[in-house]
Image (cartoon, rainbow, N blue to C red):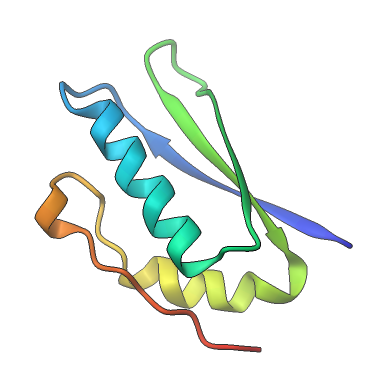
Amino acid sequence: MIRVIKHVIVEPTPDRHARIARILATIQGAFPEATTDIVQGLLDDDLVVEVRLPLDRLDAWRSARGLWTDFNRADDTRRAQPHES
């Protein structure tokens, strides 16, 4: 299966670990078939949530990602339900 890799950059903030948890929960809720890893970003302090999902879900990712906030606060997180392809 061909997969695409998408990245969500997580800059250093006091609540970074909570933000990562919100990002992972949102992604897994919308795309249970996706796999994720936390990797080092280009800048020393940045982390990246690396998401691998099937190529046929790319349009659904784009739709869902456009609805998500920047995950700065717990009450900002909206869970987008991707369109089935």
